[in-house]
Length: 260
Ligand code: ADP
Ligand code: MG
Image 1 (cartoon, helix red, strand yellow):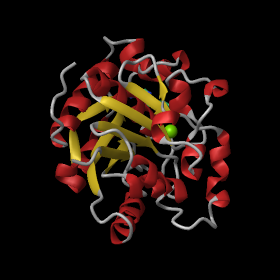
Image 2 (cartoon, rainbow, N blue to C red):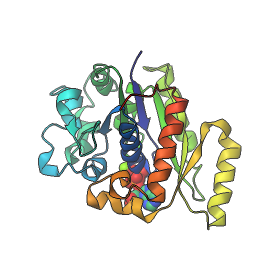
Image 3 (spheres, rainbow, N blue to C red):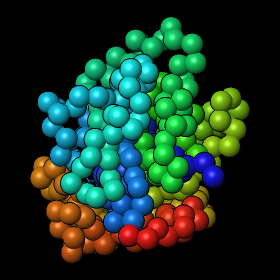
């Protein structure tokens, strides 16, 4: 059976892609799965948030794309058992231009993820754009997970994202699926957020996960402590929500429970 490779994508910035990749990854690792996060954003927030300081980023996603390293060598261990990350640095920002003449430039990541150890779950933290990097993620992926922030313009831009998914399906990756849409940063004291969630569910129906991630200050504090919220404050509302989400996510993917 092929590995599960999930592109966490939305071309909007600040919707919770990195937070979701890091905390879903940590929760799945806690459940006993072997998880590799690929930090595909030149900002390197997932790398920093998991405690990989810039001077420790020996082998990066850039080296992975150019074929100078492989997934297993480039995956750095984190403090969370079972969770590794291929870090990124700002040089990834020029990948679009640097790789523009390379043949098969949209399948560079796929060539690497195809050789992952069987049973590994790979989560790709995409940059806030639909350029070459995100397309590489979608070509490599088995499914796309879309975090959507519970705010007024939540659905804006979604049609563009769906059309990119459609293009990738018509080209290099006909089997690409949509894993689902995760509502993030919801505030239940806020009527607008509730209305937005209701609209999103009415529009996207079964595509929307039941679990909603609440806005929780512990979630936003955790990255500055170089930890997932699950490790920083395991009893927080944010940790509980990401654990629930990981269970729902695993069930939907029919991941067999691993023995810890
Ligand atoms: P993206 O990767 O889509 O740009 P991030 O995951 O970096 O988005 O989230 C954007 C900001 O919102 C970050 O500062 C993050 O810490 C914060 N954030 C994300 N999810 C939550 C949450 N559930 N509660 C509070 N703050 C959050
Ligand atoms: Mg991010």
